[in-house]
Image (tube, rainbow, N blue to C red):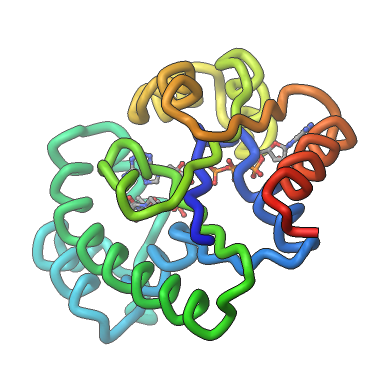
Length: 198
Ligand SMILES: CC(C)(COP(=O)(O)OP(=O)(O)OC[C@H]1O[C@@H](n2cnc3c(N)ncnc32)[C@H](O)[C@@H]1O)[C@@H](O)C(=O)NCCC(=O)NCCS
Ligand SMILES: Nc1ncnc2c1ncn2[C@@H]1O[C@H](COP(=O)(O)OP(=O)(O)OP(=O)(O)O)[C@@H](O)[C@H]1O
């Protein structure tokens, strides 16, 4: 089975992905693939440098991620431009990796961690979608703590994504990650048993 894992920024997707991997799931991580497709030599990095200027590269030729983030997370047109460059490459590499894993491990659960799964309309690619849910207030607190950012910046980042309540409504499975990690782990165990994965 191939499922999508999504949620809001800092809702706990990586945390839940790890719990699933600990139980034997095979993971494909869109944030990681997004980093791979902008390595030096990749066409997407050249396109980014053409659009955003050579100053977006560091001296060693790698992408200056925080500088690019400072531009695109404050300007929707720039973000759309960046996405038009990177998303096709990310999607292609994700699909290749997912299907390689699934073909080589027909009995395994393959989990694709895709932060923007609903925003980019990728529901049909998966047999089911798990949403990691926390109320927005918890999302703000955890994002501020993890990234040491102020409340206004955390709210801005959250506003760039689909409302987490809407993601929860669309989900096939909801993991409520607003409590302790032990409570979250219990929900993962129930999911695992219900899918007959034991
Ligand atoms: C702008 C970039 C270089 C900033 O890099 P940085 O290392 O600072 O952040 P990182 O990539 O770890 O992203 C952190 C979180 O920001 C959020 N985020 C990232 N890209 C986007 C986006 N296009 N729209 C909304 N939220 C986003 C996600 O929740 C992500 O988990 C980077 O986020 C990027 O290349 N984004 C475009 C590619 C993309 O859409 N990635 C999302 C996964 S497919
Ligand atoms: N149940 C929990 N209780 C307390 N803190 C938690 C819990 N789950 C996750 N966290 C913390 O919240 C932060 C966000 O979690 P995580 O990095 O897993 O989110 P994410 O959805 O993968 O984030 P991103 O969208 O940025 O990739 C981390 O600092 C993590 O340690």
